[in-house]
Length: 107
Image (cartoon, rainbow, N blue to C red; front, side):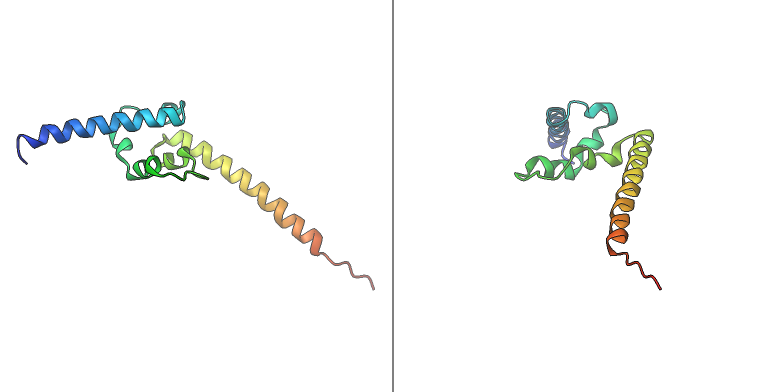
């Protein structure tokens, strides 16, 4: 690569990473508790660029986008939480359906 352009590209990448970090912190000030601040590759993820460039963020949680970058312990806790909630939801939903649709026959 051209010796003149390479330092500019490196500087531009650093500035973009810092900008994404700032946007993330403004979105969720606890973000660096579960994502490694010093790992720049996290902040170059195209999903983050799409998220911050989108005018419609309804229903999108930034923690969901960063889930793959969270440390394994936090991922396991979140997965366990989701599993427990899913079991409760399924039991309530399916249990409610079976009770509503249950027909008692007596001979």
